Image (cartoon, rainbow, N blue to C red; front, side):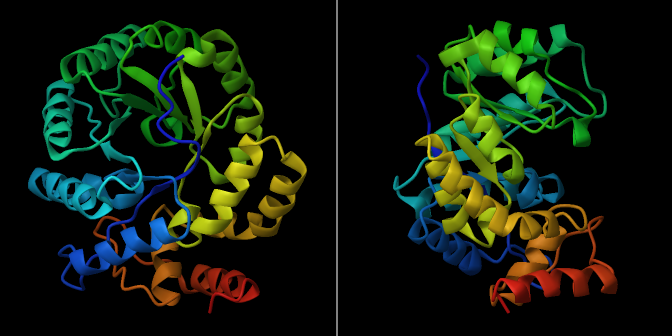
Length: 295
């Protein structure tokens, strides 16, 4: 059985910016503490939700180092180091390892993409050269590249590839991956609303956008589901489904940053090309936030 990095809810942490778009490290430290105080089981630095794609390499590594330093080993830190260039991904991954990250999160190559054979070679190359736990990240809606269950089976034979963050939206495919790989590849949901079905197939939890604003409820949903208490987990999940949907009224992380700013966090703007929501979507999200007594 492969190492289980965490069970429950890991947060794909946002990056707060000042109005001049520089990184607000004081608020980033506050967000780290907010997550740990409210039960988050792991923190992802520099994932999609962090706007890592708009960071320079220097900023990217500084944010990883900062989060590792502030977490102080209280929960595992995942570092997003994926790239569509294998050499760049390896360079970032080795730097993240040196910074003290516990695990790598590696998105599939995007734009130039690759074949399933290329995925196997890409991931094995990074895993074998870093010799540290790796979580694959499958999000075809962003990359237009999907990891097939049979490809997962091959990759699960690598001792350093321990898990996947699965956001392909295809529960049948997740079921097949779980059946083929068993305990050689742990599965985390990459979609808050699919946490319970993925856990029911043997998944270990979720790597969450929702947790940025409300870490305790999603921690409880995931923890209850992992413990097999699906009825209670479902009741709690249904309570927050409208807000999970609201955080995708626009491109992630635009809505969740808007919500957190409204909730009193100094998360600032998103960097271009991400921009503000329409007035209509602002009003829709405000209504959901008010319903949950968050404004």
